[in-house]
Length: 240
Ligand code: PGA
Image 1 (tube, rainbow, N blue to C red):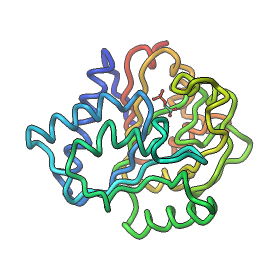
Image 2: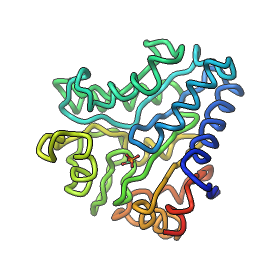
Image 3: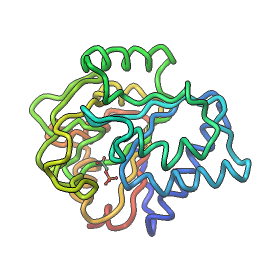
Image 4: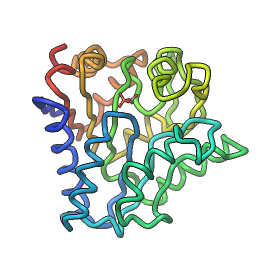
């Protein structure tokens, strides 16, 4: 694991955007794994600027998002589908056919998850996966538990995540109770992983991750087995 400690959110975002742009410049048809949440918003803003300045071209890129609430309609402004269009996809030239997000409107969640997993594999896996981290150490919607799932699956959200995400909804009661998410193995099969973390509230989870110990009670610690993980965080996430 490599750890990059930044002065602030903007520096973290810039470093992450440069890694994404380099990946695409090295391999124009790169397969990107993308994340939602407030952490990567700055990175997406910089990537849009880089696209406008012709520093990166998304025309051959394929994307797979980590997760989506379930059930949720794509037109719901809190859906991750909506988030990705708002912050990235509607501003760049990635073809719509190349965009993949677990379908929160699928009637059969199990079938949707199986097809999603297979589709990632059919592209030869993810070249670069961007991750955030939950205050409780979740990655995607892989929440702390005695057992974790390997592959893309439907899962319940913990109270901690419902409460953290309720800031985006009218009330905690409006946060969907389930999600579709890549599993731990889906994430670990990515060739390169960049995890972003910003702020004191992430310090506990980041400390556990960099301790080197592995526990399903902090799913991010599973990333310790990956051979190409870069953690880019600000001082507060690192030092507390
Ligand atoms: P955040 O969420 O970026 O909004 O803090 C991160 C996560 O829960 O994975």
